[in-house]
Length: 465
Image (cartoon, rainbow, N blue to C red):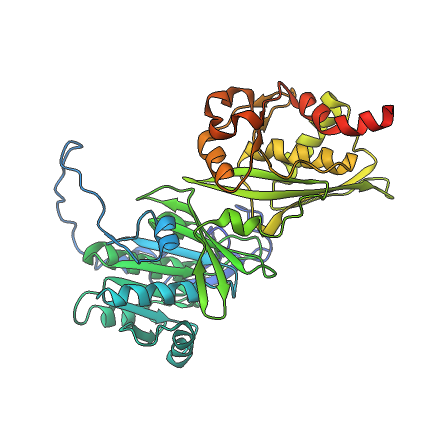
């Protein structure tokens, strides 16, 4: 019998090394190489493939043909269905990641109960909790009276044999993929080989039977789903469940979806009875806003097809240090540095001797560049000590020349602002046709200097008097 060869696999990127080293040559991470055998499974030698069957001929077709919409299973939880693009697609694999204790198991338990109430067969397999622990959570969530089938198992072959017995399940939830192990690999659970092999077996089952599979993934300290990124490429959709420990709301963000948009979010509020849907997240993010405090600007943003209003807070204070601090929460720190440079170069606003702190209220995270104008307004407001109008929203992208560029979906942003009682808006000049009902209170600056002059105008008038 041939002796199994030893290899070392990076747990961060999946690169195979023939010998151990302290640093991975591919991704540059330290202490990520783990010893794994090659007697079978991924990375096995040619000897293990001698009994492989002969390939069969696959029928080929062309691009022209009938197109059908993907069959979906709607959960009835509107925010979850929004994030998934309308519900779980039959025969698809979905990966859900999030920090420990953020509420992934709670969300999936509620979704399983909602689908079971509609007559679907749901199987919940946990590799981290006992059946009694899942039942306790179900009682707290009011889902103990549903027909969700439970199991506590980590072997992939046993799981597939169990769910294949009887009527095909409509949805299978695996919590979590890092705890599974398969007989095809010799390494420990959670390693690259085991995670990849287990995910392949479950996805193959989903494609062949039409059952939807939901895999729960752990998240590293950098915020990425643990294990090789190849698992994210294998599945049909990737959702991140986000939230801050000090806040009671959670955001389900779509980062990959083969059957729908990739920039949708679902907003939930955590309570002792589980997760509650938030139909209007703008009211949640603006609920504790102080209208008279300087350094606060309301940004009208977009998350997929949904407009969201959120408060951006800035604090500019004299720095006792030789190198002032720049701290950002919820936004890109490099983009803040760019806005500060544009304000100094083109508007004469000096931040060189001041500490700058920027925060997006409620722990919300902004990714679109349309927030540039709101950030600049908040910074100038904090530096001058003048509060911005309480009924005004801001959006627009700032270029390096100090110009304000138009952004998409201006009409939807302004409609959301008008619905929440805002009567004025500061927006790019190219969005004039989309102002709508708050046209009388809109201001379209020709450049960033016009906005600075408008904000600092009252202070200059007092100084001249």
